Amino acid sequence: MSATSVLIHLFGEIALLLWGINMVNSGVQRAFGSDLRWILGVALRTRLQAFLAGVGVTTVLQSSTATALMVASFTAGGAVDIIPALAVMLGANVGTTLIVQVLSFDVSLIFPALIFGGFVAYRRGRTSRIKDLGRVTIGLGLMLLSLHLLSETIRPIESSTVIKDLLAVIAPDPLILVLLSAIFAWLAHSSVAALLFIMSLAGAGVIDAHSALVMVLGANLGSSLNPLLEGTSGDPVKLRVPFGNFAMRVIGCLVALPLIDPILSAMSIFDPHPARLAANFHTLFNVMVAAIFILPLPWIAQLLLKVFPEKLRASDPGTPQYLDKDALDTPSVALSNAAREVLRMVDTVESMLRSSQDLFREDDISRVDQVSRTDDVLDRLFSAIRRYLSSINHESLSETEAKRLSDILAFAINLEHVGDIIDKNLMELAAKRIKNHLRLPKDSLEDITSMHAKLLEHLQLAASVLMFQDLGSARRLVSEKERFRDLERAVAQKHLEQLRSGRTVGDTSVLQLDIVRDLKRIEAHIASTGHSLLEQSGELKPSRLTS
Image (cartoon, rainbow, N blue to C red; front, top):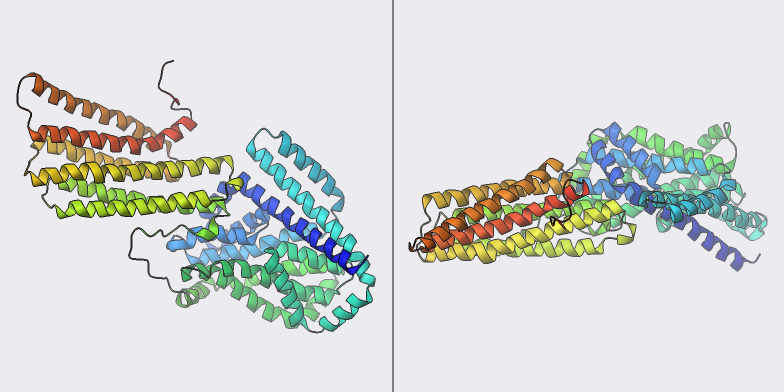
């Protein structure tokens, strides 16, 4: 086989390995993405819990980078302390070693069964989760197939004098080996792929056991570069966790590199096979790094806080704070970011409602303009959220995540409509009242104040429905909507009775009628947040028509 032919085969087989890893990663995220994110969210409390969660989630995802993005969604804005976040990354590094351990054994005979079984599940599965698990199984089969092909391609290289001479020149210089394997792991975006390739080279005798262990160190360094480079743009806070993870690995490599020979001698007693030695050293290295650094994490965190201080937030309230573009390829994280930004819209609408409530009592015309400017902030936040949601990788969305995206967008649209009603209708009525020196009757003012208070309460209920899928809050929202309808009818009936009796209907009566009508429209937009959850749970019919 010519050198060109060997390179073509190697590139194709490495691409097949990376594609298999990608299929496993995307399949798991589509099947369990929200559950994995929930596990991380619950576990980010103590160092030990965070470490174990990092091990588990990364073992399933086979990607410490994906785990790092999930952790970033919690640490952004200081929602979660940096100490458990660093512990998750220590666990994630150990998690990547488990799949390498499994694949270091001869399991090539099962890849046809995995591919066939995954294909059947993908084509015949009745639910989206079964189809996604079929995708995961196919990915595992492709990984094993690529390893089998790699070993077959590399085997003839063992007898190549050119390769042996080249490696003989490189092998004495461990820094070059570390650099080469680090570059490969960085390009592959996967320490698993890099380790499997190193094991294939070692198993075929292309590199000796000493060189394999040195390259394992480089692969660990290279895989930690990806999340570090992705956090270089924007707020320096994003660099805290990836830089801490990278620094701990650098220190581990500096300590381990001079000790390669005694480590190799000790490990060869248990299993002298070069490929298994590489896998075992990979596990040993990451376990030792975790054991050494998990206790001093508080001091490491303090240092990182000083080196990467929080960037001052933009003074413009219409600037998004949580829409991290690096998370767009991880739907569960991106949806969480969008939901957090929608909560900022909730805060903005709450501010507008409180100002509206005051303006039917007070005569400060300048606050009318202030509310109009606040609506501009709301519009800009909505536009940013809409663009962000449209940029999410929709192909990797599970049914649950697709439904979640739809609910977030629908809530954001409703909030934007509420802002328009306050700005273009209620503020126009408030300005008219102030300019014409009108005073609402005490009973009317009490009704309007009560309705505003209810709207503020319902706005928080709607946010609870969105964030926590709270059925109780959803039921209250829908039932309160009926009460608002009854109140509007009562006000309209009172107005009609005044007309029928021949009494002159004053401007304040018409003004109250218009205000109540607009408040009821706001209530309808807020209450609609509960409809989707109640329909999903079977507590609300999709249509109220009898036939």
